[in-house]
Amino acid sequence: MSVDFVASSRLPTRHGQFTIHAFEEPQTRQEHVALSMGDVGNGEPVLMRIHSECLTGDGFGSLRCDCGPQLEAAMAKVAAEGRGVILYLRQEGRGIGLVNKVRAYQLQDQGADTVEANEQLGFAPDLREYSMCEDMLRHLGVSCVRLMTNNPLKVEALEKHGIRVVERVPLMTGRNPHNDQYLDTKQEKMGHLL
Ligand SMILES: Nc1nc2c(ncn2[C@@H]2O[C@H](COP(=O)(O)OP(=O)(O)OP(=O)(O)O)[C@@H](O)[C@H]2O)c(=O)[nH]1
Ligand SMILES: [Zn+2]
Image (cartoon, rainbow, N blue to C red):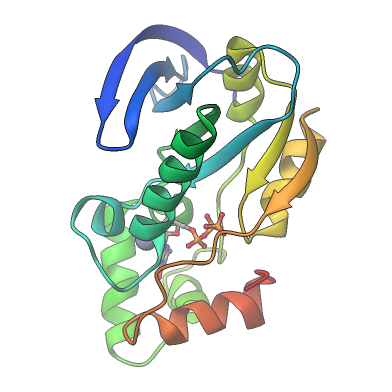
């Protein structure tokens, strides 16, 4: 999916001052944003996070997943280096959307794991794709990254879109009794490097 750059502005945060860049997919009007700090277009590898929207974890502090602490940790690491990028992609629920994610949570409350719940709803375990990253990174002048993730599919997807990943930086944070099994399932069934 191609995306158009729309606007950017200053974004002071508790981790320091970022610039927020807004993008839109012309066909679907799907919106995505990037946060950047420092001179990311100078050709040096850029510390980067691709974060998939999780309203429950990022916004409400849900302990069912590790998204909130991962986003906080990624922003803190970028701030510590004074340079980096967070691509915040609006792919809620690994692409099934917020309402379907709550449906999946309901099935998980009844015993399904995160993969089984998606399958019971008729979805693949992970519907995300990352083609929009290419336009977003081109706009920011980034072609080479150190990617903060535990998901090898994200590394593969970026390389497929012409972005060089010189390092995978593990992002292990936020394990708790409520998401213990969820993280184990990601490791066992989805190949995450936890
Ligand atoms: N369908 C579904 N989506 C979930 C569930 N729990 C979290 N998510 C979504 O999963 C996405 C985050 O993906 P994860 O699999 O946790 O991690 P990742 O982004 O693939 O990998 P990392 O880069 O290591 O964080 C967010 O969009 C969440 O909303 C769930 O039980 N079911
Ligand atoms: Zn989450």
